[in-house]
Length: 349
Image (tube, rainbow, N blue to C red; front, side, top):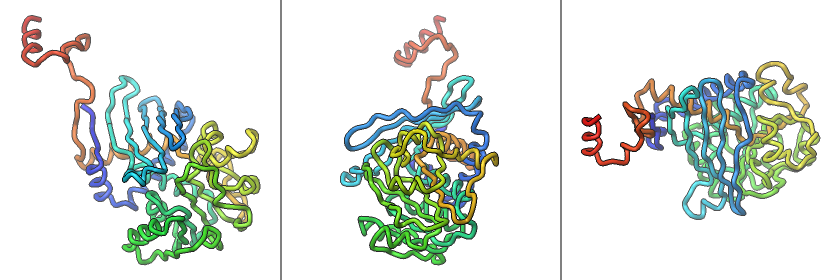
């Protein structure tokens, strides 16, 4: 049987663990898998693009488990009462192909994106960072804010979104965290001023320049999350040229990340090598660093692995017959017959 985690079950799991603990433990799980990066069979995600969005499949596996995520990105969905990003995923056994988990990943993707941002910032941002700018206050913004506040010590977050209602929502949702100071700003430039960390997490599928060179200050760390498909960027190319840029999986980021604006030989650093300790991250306090985050399948593998473990420990989720069970694996036709006929066939046999 396959364990099935739907949205209500995922919500119950997160509430039982606690959202900030969930993010922290997930960041550790993702980091542990990134450190064993060479053990995974990797490929860029398979994407089907349209003028208004993208639908993608994201596969990855090691010697024991295979995972994939189905995910979309449609910025206009909010006008139709739908989330911009929706997802589900599967975790399967490599030796048999049997699916052990089918799970919602819309909520979990927001958590894993925040966890990945946290994982990168722990090795790339200046120690002692206290002020962050959050450009884009939509569906994933609270998770980013909580990740950096509760696990990295950020005390003040400057907020900007082209839609003031998105900022209203974020401030309302983070009201239970009175020790986090939220500052509403009237422009991205004002939000960025004096920030140690800048997170950009906008949704529009466009070649945008939300961060321009004049906004950059020595020592800033840019957590560039929103540029995640061809034709979609957030940072001016000169911001990248002047920074040390880190990526998840270079063949995918060259196509989808902010570095799609730059020549194919523009130098980048594999984040997994930094986490493994074989390559330096930030080299000096004044250096500008950019995590060109597009989201990679290994992060979803880690998330599904973590969710399965936590759900099993708490006896959450239901068992579903996603693939047929049988006592005769050469007879699939029986599953097309009415139950009485199947019984008769078995008696004859």
